[in-house]
Amino acid sequence: QVQLVESGGGLVQTGGSLRLSCADSGRLFTFNSMGWYRQAPGKQRELVAVISSGGTTNYADSVKGRFTISRDNAKNTVYLQMNSLKPEDTAVYYCNAKRYYSKSTYQEYWGQGAQVTVSS
Image (cartoon, rainbow, N blue to C red):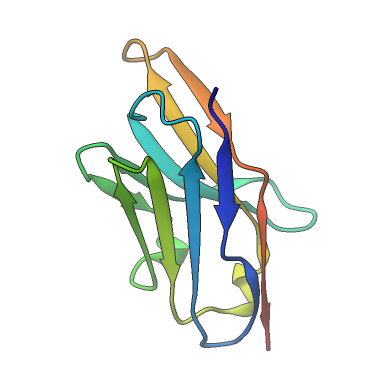
């Protein structure tokens, strides 16, 4: 059974850093992609960063140069290192994992969410 467990959220001042982790406790298979989304109050959930099993990454423009996504395939764990945090980064961050069956068909899993609050 897939269960994505997140850790590492919290409160930090502007310019500070946080590191989020998301581990799959089931470890039944390797996800084709793992990533992070975030949702601020009153806004839609948006992609922050994603990484493939081969290490290819993609970032939202708003976090490029400040956030780094990485993963450990052996542990089925994905990380998000967040530096130079800004108040607009405040949101609930959700871990996401996808297992593809074809180019357009996949099963998707979500973590429970981790609150990140950046104070000005």
